[in-house]
Length: 223
Image 1 (cartoon, helix red, strand yellow):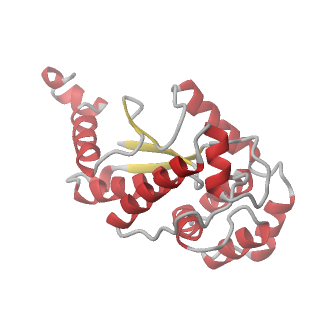
Image 2 (cartoon, helix red, strand yellow):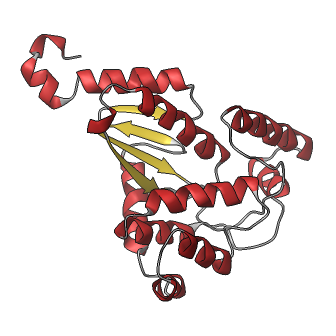
């Protein structure tokens, strides 16, 4: 069974949702038969690299007051900490994540995509380092074992792995995913937004029971 997950490292709900899904998957009886595929999604593909504080940028983007956005940030922090994740309220800056998505595809080709994703999430939400800075991205990539020279080449050429990022985003659009996190199980079931661990568990159970191989063996159980 395949689970595809569309995320943006800039998204706090993706940070928390990934942790909750992983908890559900760890408790899933057939977890060794589940392939997890991480896909790219840019919440704001037109965002420019900058230094605008995240609270101010997102409040302006969605037409909220600063107080409303601070409340949302504090809620996200409480949910993250409940999952054992670090979260510094308002410590991030707003920027473009396209280079990071390209780098994650490169990391995938070298077998360390999840490691880089986890580190990028941690840096973005729990540390005061910017994932929108190429030198920071380079250091993170090297930290998870990627070759420094190859990383520099990827970051220097905006066309490298661009097609892979765009392909992921097209698939999200074709599936009707307008936001993240978005979890798609065997292209049959979708789970979006910030959901509890229990819902992920039920979705895994249902998708497993109704996967093509199971329906062939037990046609009476098909939904």
